[in-house]
Amino acid sequence: MNPDPITTPHSNMTIDEQVAYLMQGTEYGDEELKQAMATELRQRLLDAEKNHRPLRVYCGFDPRTSNLHLGHTVPLRKLRQFQELGHDVTMVVGNYTSLIGDPSDKDKLRPRLTNEEVEHNARTYADQAYHILDRTRTQIRYNAEWLSELPFVKLIELASNFTLQQFINRENFRLRWDKGDPIYLHETFYAIMQGYDAHMLRADVQVGGTDQLFNIVTAARKLMTFLGGQPNIAIILDILPGTDGEVKMSKSLGNHISILTGAEDMYGKVMSVPDKAMPQFFRLITRWTPAQVAEIEAEIASGALHPRDAKMRLAREIVTIFHDAQAAEQAEEQFKRVFQQGNLPEDMPEMALTPGQSVLDVLLAAGLAASKSEARRLLEQNGVRLDGETLTDPAQPFPHPGVLQAGKRRFVRVRA
Image (cartoon, rainbow, N blue to C red; front, side, top):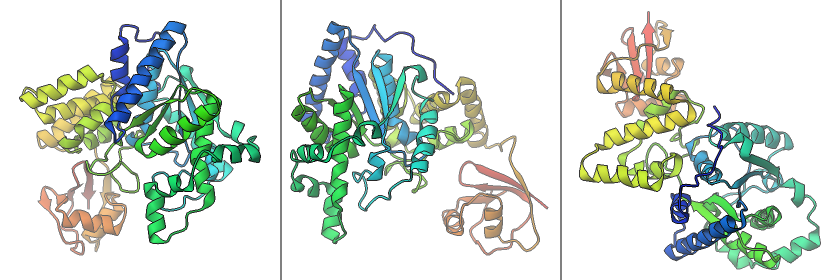
């Protein structure tokens, strides 16, 4: 699903409203730095308006995954906001930086990708990104275009702007240093290469997560200035928590919401997000403006809007983005029928019970658990029910045919 193409910029927004919109969801870990970036952004927007020139905005990604979850869409949503305001957006595929692998959010060396992996992931990543971005207004560039031509003497010149201490003192390098794990010299090139990307694109704005703070604020701005250009403005976005509401959304942690999942599953998973995480979801992945977010939060605070109803509004918004309004409405009705009214889904998969199968066997055969450890964990947490009765013993012979439920949203009809 491609979102509605953008035909005209949001000319009705004042400059101050635009700054608030574009700074929504940012997190710098330093209020002074945040205010400095907001001030620079305001001036750059004024200059763009005066000179009738759209800002050049970009975000780079290393194509290490081909299946996106909501956490991956946070920078895409920010790029879309710039598009709505009439600015030029570029997605940079890091097919050259992926030879190193970004060490920013890892405490170990990242493996290199093959050219085939890069090409496949970049293609599918872009296709999924168009759920949010306007395809007709998005340019895609590959940074091998300029980095592969960078002479060694130029790299030495760029590297002279940094000290080893600046890299070693970064948190993830420091963790490896303290543990005695190796830190390879080529890993320090990543920030320099990313800064050179910004220079070659003559970027006004670079969008990234908090793990990119050093790469954008320190490296890119320093190199752009050194090379005689105007430093780009860093839009540093907060990290979206997973469905547990505690840590970063991650496929490996199982707390993610895939953007390719069905409408009902997506709606149900959003509804499972703890209330405390809702503000981050409001600001990072919805189409809502700061004024709309403030209104919802004020209604929750005053008691005029129940947190459950606010979350249902959030789930509708997210499902509408990745499916459509009709699918969101149907998903909400299904959720109400199953979880609020206690009814079972109208349609559910079926499986035949084999004599001698244990509860653990059936959970695995039905696809309600991906592994034995996950199945045992569900049972220990009282998350498995047969016709409403809780099952806890994995070795127990499966009691009888009926409706087997695992967690809040997964059902299978087990027949004889």
